[in-house]
Length: 134
Image (cartoon, rainbow, N blue to C red; front, side, top):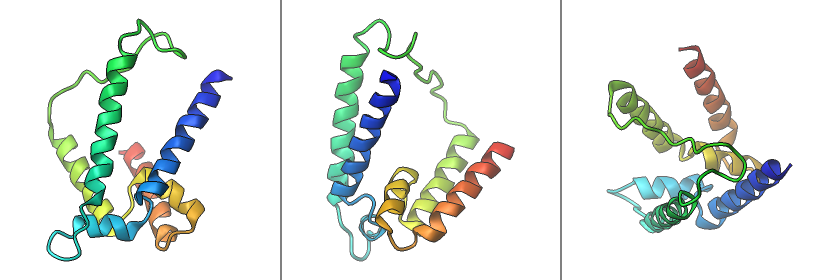
């Protein structure tokens, strides 16, 4: 039960952070990506803050022998950059740039009724299904 409650709290904090930072607003995201037009650098601060929190969190958590709700830490070990990583990153970036949504913020945008989410979210689901099939 503690695992479910902690996951809920973490998701709630993440969602609130997305809403407060403007990451769930596709116009703000698209303005961040528009270097030649209405560029809005404010999301750099959001990303910088996220990196700082994750870096600090990893340093603190990894001092433990095991996680609280599992037997071992599950940290990726691969460090190589291959064709699949590059292609997947490019497709992800294109989707983000076209729609203005990232998968996480798209979930909060459903609840906020953001414009365009009615097209983006089903496309995200179809993409995930196609990925599983490939």
